[in-house]
Length: 114
Image (tube, rainbow, N blue to C red; front, side, top):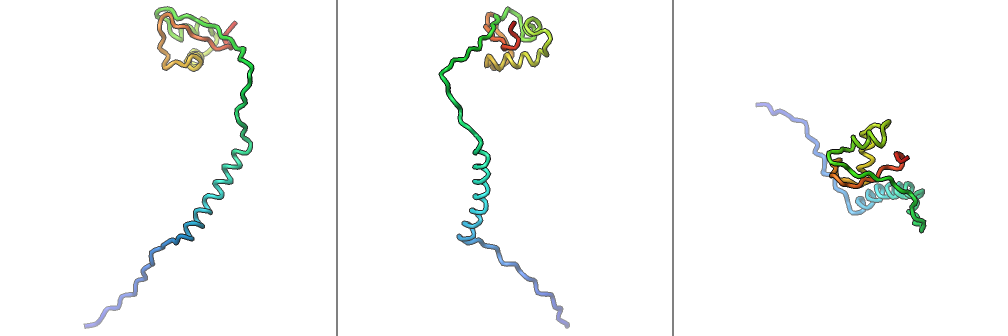
């Protein structure tokens, strides 16, 4: 019988990172992130409060029974896309949906006031 020689397989040792290696790796990741945060926040300014009251007044419409935002758009803003008008009214009045109730008072965006 002849012996068959197999090449020796080289087993890679498991890579282990030491506490010092973790500290270096953490620093290499944290320093550029901190620099990025500082760079992006450097030009930011805080909100400024003033004592002047807003002088914007809105025209209001009382919703009639069966009336929709599209119906109101046709009367108040005939040359405007009704979807855009409806979205602005919903946002301005902080409505949960575009569903209206008879007698509801809606503020109309200033750009559509006469």
